[in-house]
Length: 364
Ligand code: IPM
Ligand code: MN
Image (tube, rainbow, N blue to C red; front, side, top):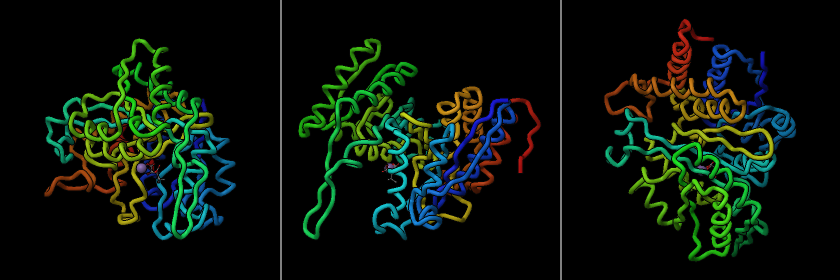
């Protein structure tokens, strides 16, 4: 039987709770579709600081590069928000992305019909929304040098090379070919030289994809389009910081940040993590929505392990669970019963089994 090795990085906050459900889903998918999942857990974020004084300990670095794929929870313990250097939880995540060369971050946003009421936007504005944000992940202001601060001044650097722009652009165009064949590239070319280079480079790469439509939007207008006409967008291609901001905005369309998965792909094994943060306010209470993590496990199956049938089954099971009205607190309407993290995991697991006509049974 095929054996896949997954490095599991639960992180801090709600990370461990939601990741446990995603791991359970991976195991069940393996049982049903005939492959073995080997997992090994590693510390990242505040858990890494507790273990080794480092948000990305050496043991974790060795483990992730040797894995077939990486499943992560969330990092961001506010107790360490002002910690220096690599003791800040977010620094571990940024170092992890860089270590893996994970330059292309895919963030799909679709609106499940049963959840149209969960968004503050009018339900009719949400019809047909199905978009993919392709966010550049290892460049831009997040990593640019020089950077630093004194008491009276601070500096960060926005820098992109043609090669960095080209490779993420190709990811966006390849993805568009499997979707509705349209790329919207986001920049601020009316102000920034980096954006002018971005626009020129994207336009040049686009010539290799004559079957894909390309348009360019300034980032301020793109922010407006995402709420005014979100169904117009197919693939949204953007640099690192713009993508960070626009993906949280797009999450509003889906109804909850807790639903959204991501895949970060590049030179090494892929990194799969929900878009949401560590939500310290609800951590440890068993109420967090695990769907973002479970949908990230589906992306791991699809892009990391090439187990497409299993990935599709997990996606279908999530959809069926929502169709059946199962809701965590972030999705429940007032008066509606909300289930906990574990129960939502149970509901999805039983539907994966049911999709294959197997006996619904829980694994632990
Ligand atoms: C995200 C997060 C991270 C980012 C933080 C935690 C560093 O907001 O994945 O969107 O800004 O990239
Ligand atoms: Mn973000």
